[in-house]
Every structure is written in C-alpha cells, then in structure tokens.
Image (cartoon, rainbow, N blue to C red):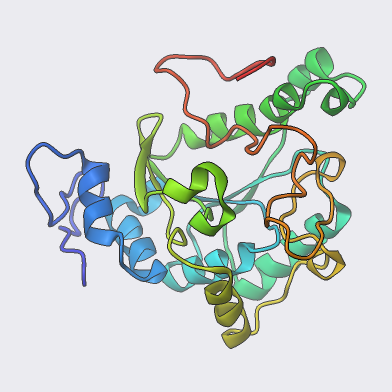
Length: 258
C-alpha cells in the first residue's frame, strides 16, 4: 500500500485518504494502521522530509526502530535525551548502535545548565519529585529540539500496556504529527526482526531490564512482570512526560501532581 504524495512539496502534500471531517492525523492513521512499520516510516519521511525527527532512548528495544529508519534514510535526525542520569551501558550502546547502523545525525539533548542549577542543584530531585526531574531532564530539552520539526517518530508499542493499549499509529501532539510505527508489533515481532538483522541487544537486557531509563528510576523485573514494571517502581508514574499532552500554550510541567 504505497502513499501517494507529491514529492515536490513534502511539507504540505495531502494524504491519499480524504475522508471528510477527519484531521490529517486521523486520515493517516486510518490509512496506515495496518501497515508494516517500514511503510509507516517511509510515508512519514515522504511527507515531511527533513522536517521529521525520530526520538530514541537507545534503550532495550530501540535497535529495531533505528534499523528500520536507517533503511528509509540514515540521515533522519535522531534525538537522544542524555539526561545526565543514564546508565553508562546506555551511553556505550548509543555509540555502538549509531556506528553499526550508519546513523548520520544523532543529536544528544541535555538539560540546560540554568534549569539544573535552579531546579536540581544536588542532582537528587528524583528522590522527592520524579515528575519535576523528568521535566528538567527530558521534557524541556525535547520540546526545544522539536521546535525545528513538524513531525516525529516514537518507539512506543501497545503491548507495553497502560495508556499505550490505545496507541494510534499516527496521532497529533502539540501541533505536530507523531508517528508510532511499532504500535501494532508484539515482543515476538521485535525479537524476530532483531534476530533476522543481527541487531545487538542493550547490555542490560540480559540482566533483567526489559525497559531502561535513568538509573535511579529503573529496576530489573521478575519473570512474568509487565515490561515497564521496573520504571518508577512503587509509584503511580508510568510516563516520563514527553508523551503527556499539555493544554495549548501551556508551559512544560514544573513539578507536583499531573
């Protein structure tokens, strides 16, 4: 199922599906909801070109999406949130995987010095307010980086559970289109693809970490537990905030309850 876009204008070319009353995100989601991830990525790239970015944690399941994207174009900008709290293994894996896949434009996003100085001078905010910590180290840097793009790609999947059970393949977020090419895939699909293409695993996966974030808020999980059970374990928190909708014109969340 090929997307019929006018290649002369990637930023405004309409999708083939023109159902009345539906937004662009809804029309694209209807057309792509059963498509292979590579087709979804190609459609996004054909539509947005250099106005498309891919956000990756270089975590436990990141290699599959990055490999798929590299087949479309190794020059798609990859935004990596280096929070200053990542496992050393993640930083090493980011270098290894980018080199193996031939990624040409991996951008390391770091928290602003002034935000750390005023909001987390002791680097221990995670102990008292994980939402505020994520906001300083993830939400604010990503919001700033995404200002230069009209669409972005994530690696979220429905099998992760929680709010992701209802994940669309294409959605609108903060005035941009967000593509979730792996939304339909299962853990078995990911494992089969990784094996077929000989993709290296994150070194912490073998130690019982099926989902990997910052070291203070990530723990190994027991067999049979939810994939994301080790993220913010013991709290009600399930997302870092970069996928949490904010009211139009609202500033990034600065702490407290969401």
